Length: 411
Picture 1 (cartoon, rainbow, N blue to C red):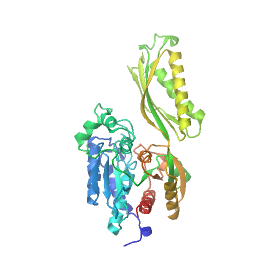
Picture 2 (cartoon, rainbow, N blue to C red; picture 1 turned 180 degrees about the vertical axis):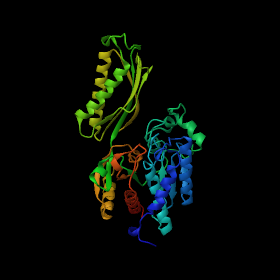
Picture 3 (cartoon, helix red, strand yellow; picture 1 turned 135 degrees about the vertical axis):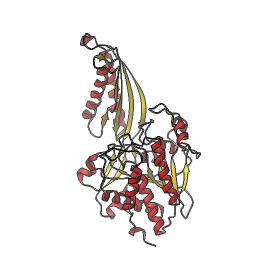
Picture 4 (tube, one colour; picture 1 turned 90 degrees about the vertical axis):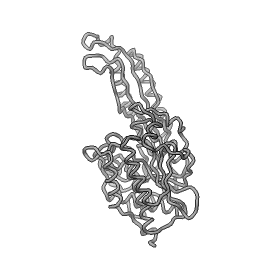
């Protein structure tokens, strides 16, 4: 039997699985559209479950469709877990989420072929609806798995196409029976592409992730008066389209003025009636605020809401809001962060301690288990885009660190 420190993953095998999974829901340009609980998601789930079974893992599916494949240890008890998600946004890449799941399977296969038995069980999980592209909120599956969000509320969520999570889980055959929140975890490690430019620009090979930014998603509805675009004087308008645009500008200006880690994004705007020569009577837009500091994040929210009230008063508009998601910043376990950094350094790789700007399943699991993340570079920082790319050597580096970290936690 090979010694643990001499072990390396089979990168070609992992890349082959990544390519196979990317064919399910493939779109032009090499990207993937596999929205949560669609037919494409079902096909992707079926493929990953088939791989899990082929590796001898015991499969469980909970009430929200979270899937866990477990390899037994010499001792019974909570597993050391890795994993991520396999759902994508509509214009997704092949690495986001998928790498964390398939690298986990590669770790299991490496141990199987070397006949290495761990003291504690090892598990690979993929969580339902991490992206939040079809159903709100994002990180839904891992949030419910960790007990932070009621399963009943998640099942009742209505998607962008009018159906519910419960109905779609039943339809695709992943409405499991294992109670959500009933599966304890000894430790959790997630491998993920950075989805940002820092590692690529600084030519650093590995990110030892210190935590996940807090996030507030809101949807604003702006109501005004529809009128003729040519005959209505500017000072007599109650223009919902302008109101939405003013909110977008205010959000960006707020983030620039606060500086630091504060970011703000308006990702979606729609107007009604949506005609070139008619003043909009209604507009709807989303605002995404993020910061690593909880106090600053809530300060940003309060300042933006004050500015929105000023816009409503000045323009004679009615502006209401709806919360889509709200997550406090998460700090990962210091010992786990150090384990990732030391393992990377021990393999001769450069390391940077860094926060995650994106939300991840690890941020939810951190509430119930010591947690860490491993980042590998994203070329040009591109993600949620068909051009998302991480070089094979970087994928292999990340998977080998995952292998060694999991072994140190489980042996």
